[in-house]
Image (cartoon, rainbow, N blue to C red):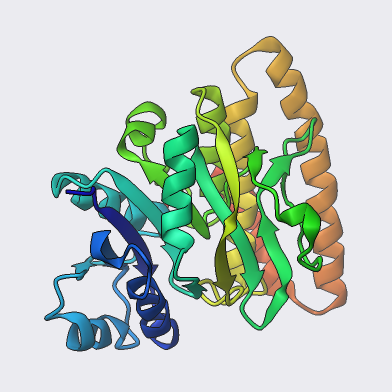
Length: 306
């Protein structure tokens, strides 16, 4: 009997996305091996009820309702833990504002079995299917900023080749139980943003490689799951978690502390520039949210903003 694969979707008020995403998953060439796990972060738009109404009698779709919104990391971890409890060894963490090609899951599975790597697919814009959103990624050498490879470029020959990369975007990433045992679960302090960046750094520190699978295609309705980056809450989490991520991986040893200082100077310049932009645009709430993010980092206030 072939081993099953959990495709884990985190839902928070994603009523307009869930059905199309689940439908595309269940059309997979390896559909007989797939268990869809929807972890609902206490949605209040009727999306959890809609999923249960449509899929509640289908054993291929399992819904885990959480009593409050615990964020991206905790919800995915709940899905992984449930799957491990069912004896499932492989997990695809997938944003619910996506659709996939029929062979995507199979391609990622095959690539992982050949390499043992965390696997990321080629992610194209759902409304511009010839344009890349993310084809793997890397980190800049000094400040360790994650960079999405191919962002806004036309899909072409250079994105048709699979290979090792440094950054696994959380929109779609394939893991195994062995990788989780080695690198751990997603860090639940982040709530939203930078959890994939931190996990990529942690995986590298544990000797776990990341691979880009060019033959696995995902179509992403960008910002559908978060509502975009123009909200004060997004400014808060990006600011706080950027500091948290880099403090985890740049502090503790002498040479790393020096790198963290360089990063911190860059961080202050970057945030100051955004402060001026937001003030010029009359977006004072964004500035206040950014200040709260810096404050809460130093006060070690993690998880959901209180």
